[in-house]
Image (cartoon, rainbow, N blue to C red; front, side, top):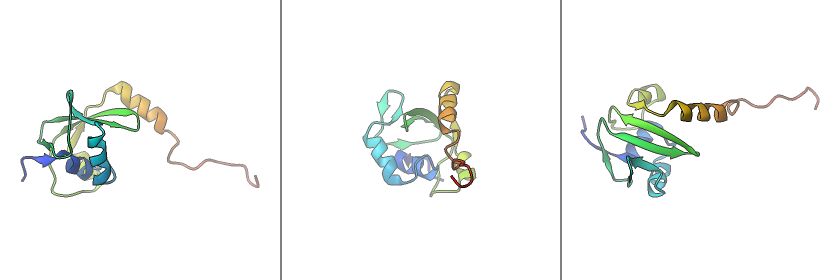
Length: 110
């Protein structure tokens, strides 16, 4: 098993970003940090590292638990990191996300 992995690839493998290109762009824009340090796409992460991700105006924190060889399904991906995001930020995200996945209702014939 690997002991280090590029941060852009890890973010894509554990499904934090839809594509590796989006993960690279987020790194280049300074939205991926470790402490006060902005990470480049080629930065190597290892288990135990804490990564801060700014996505859609929300600040998420993930601790790397496991490195992967390739992109995996969502249930497996969730076991590869620990979500260390603050409760306040999670509540703000959940309030924003409520109702986004279901289509709106309308009266019949309207």
